[in-house]
Image (cartoon, rainbow, N blue to C red; front, side, top):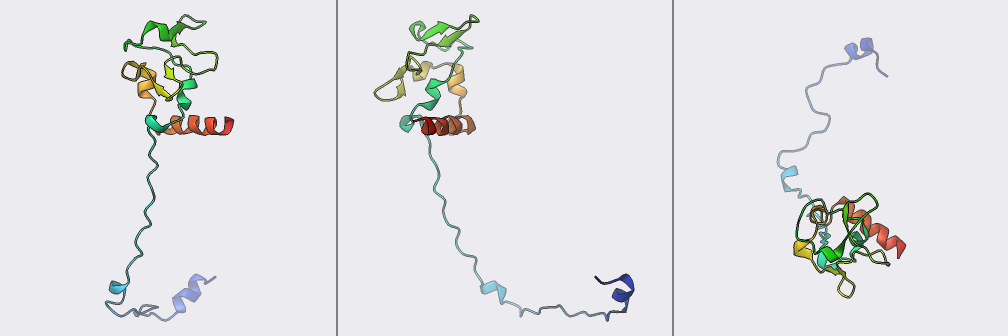
Length: 127
């Protein structure tokens, strides 16, 4: 470590420690960035992991009544069948049969968002 007294006794220099001729760095090119494939998640090719979640029908979106039930506290919820999946889920295609009339919570569940990814991860580990 250099003390302030030692630093004061050092000769002053104006030349840089490393001299690089002008223009040398102009010809050095950065490597092209490696393209990272975009992870595209859509409801059309998903394992419907979110369709096992409890969904409360907070607003009127046109959900047919035969797909709903009341929970223990009296709230209207999407009915789930004995296998735990939403009653509106088509078991063959794993697509929602009432997608255009799905509950608000389903509409706000961000496709590819943190909750979606967490549910997909949990479903993957539980299968």
